Image 1 (tube, rainbow, N blue to C red):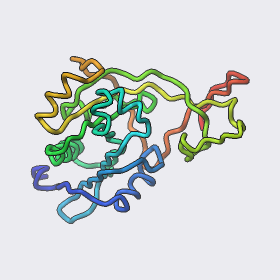
Image 2: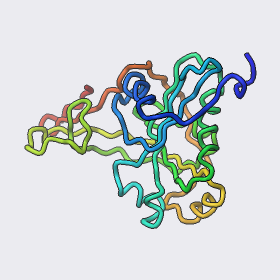
Image 3: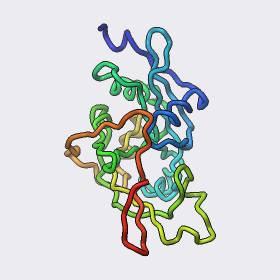
Image 4: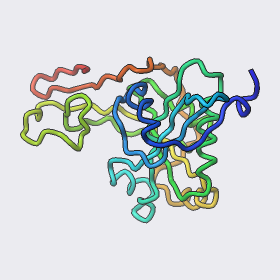
Length: 224
């Protein structure tokens, strides 16, 4: 096996190119908002992985990170999926190359590692993101599988159900060096010295991560 830089390369791709990886392979099984999409290719020009960045669904998240002045610059690394059995460090090379390509932008990128999926964010740790703590576990309005929360049923049909949103580790990266210094002085969360550690649990490509649901009438908690 040669050098990863010689075996693989990264370039921007279209949303339609990224879509099969996101819908067929990623555990969320739904399309997020995508403003930037990048692909990992081998020397035979085969697409091996996809990374997408888009505006978070919540504007409060954008404001809460660095204040209203910077809210329009806050984006989320919302999907990262690669084919199995790639050489060690290929994923960190992929993410690192994307961040390098974004070095002249004014983006402030946030991403999350879901404790519910037994993830700790090791890829963000390997590429020097700021770790800014954990979100709190909370519940959201219930929507059936593959229906986004913004499209919830307003008739009250599902009011007795709540989706459990598990705690997530929050990571932040600013590709532009000058902006990075600026953001460090205004970010609303502490930049912590110690990354979270633990055993990761890899998911099987193509399998949807089940949602935890709380039945408020009975107190039952189940997965669907």
